[in-house]
Length: 225
Picture 1: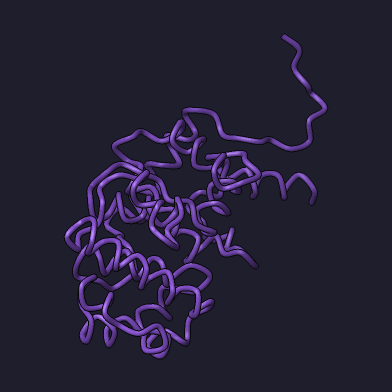
Picture 2: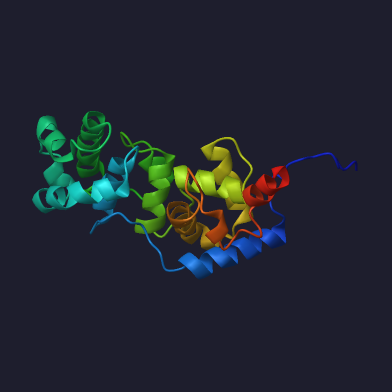
């Protein structure tokens, strides 16, 4: 086997360093959960749909009023599209989200008695529900091991070296290989919160990062200094 000694950048952490990184993340963020506010699996589904290309903070501003007036799939399915738009108009893509939420609510009432399905295959068939949203709902509401790769998880996992991928799906596959299955759902939250608090998209706070000694981004940047 030939080893490329001229390689400038490391691409992924080794197994032992991945284990160490996960231990640190668990120590720091072990008790975190989703920032979205909800009371039922259906409300979690709607909140997650609304959070696409928006922020959890913004979604949490609008959902209390929406869920107080229309708490379940049956009630939302009876809304007019314009009426739902008025509730959610401060989130991005609110018109298409209103259309999808109404369509999804009607399907849930007709096919699932107002509950949400328990498999990814069924969830992604719902209007406006992609793989990331399905994984969030499965892991939190159904206790199904899953890793939902949002912008935070994609950025942080590839920066640290838990993955080395150019797209969301490949990142998810690599994380599933590198993280023990029983920690998939927890690790999703660890990476999200690390991305919010430390490993920000712009100006990551590397000097304050508990993973600085492991992180490939930090090490590789140091090589150029």
